[in-house]
Image 1: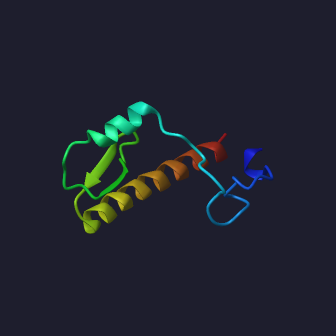
Image 2: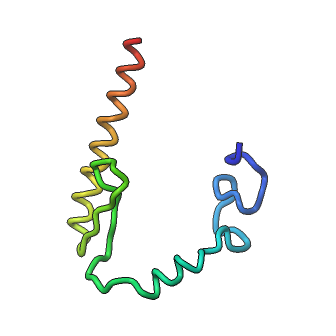
Length: 88
């Protein structure tokens, strides 16, 4: 698998930064960054709704709160999947 590929770009095998860029952003991405809305957001985390959205926060305490909610929901879903598999 790609996780075991012997390459200086494989950060699973080699510590530190790779010798060069691992991705080139599209022009649309660069334009979006240059024209980004002005906000007070400093942090973001995936939403615990698991709908592909993110939660943006202006302070670390709120970020931790939403990160914990995400982790709790992830754990709940993993436990549920494991139990369903065991009951087959």
